[in-house]
Length: 210
Image 1 (cartoon, rainbow, N blue to C red):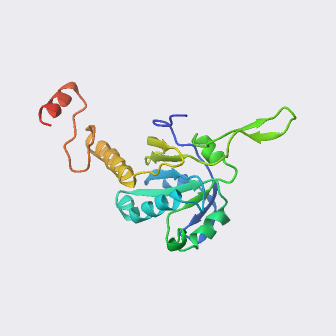
Image 2 (cartoon, rainbow, N blue to C red):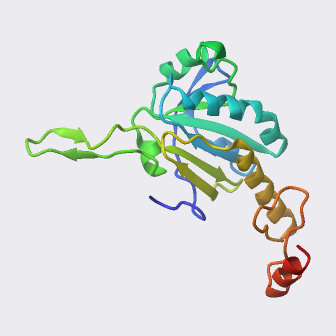
Image 3 (cartoon, helix red, strand yellow):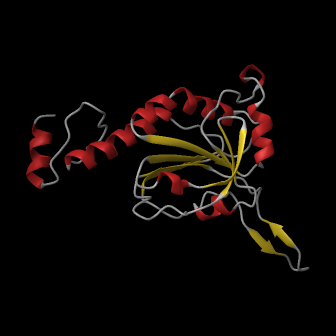
């Protein structure tokens, strides 16, 4: 599994459903460069079970991300029409109606592959046939990308394991605090808590008082 932290996030241009209704032909993260952070998260499939709980959880906290100058973008390997159809289905019936952040269609699976969250890979069989060694969907990858397009945080869960949206918000807060103050954030740091000076003395002072 590739570690993208500290590197530029892979660029892409793909179809996406925006605001739950409109299909954008060439959606790209470049529109946020120099302006906003991005939480980019991958999920395995539309019309499934754990996935809608995550998508709704991100929607419920969307205002908190946006108040932190951060946009949320989702990606799966389904088509844009599959996304659109799921977005028309009521939440009570397992749908994701009401989701407004962009949902990208990684139909050719290159985005998932470039972020190294694709569950399988292609190979050529002995009889010269193109095959796959697993179902080619995305793991539950999440990437915090800063305003310069650099990945600052990543986490990848296996398919059955849903993510903690509050932890994603905590990481945005930590990134903002570091950028604004130059301090570093110790274990279990949360917004409003004491941070540390990036020095041995700063560590000693922090440990002495906590």
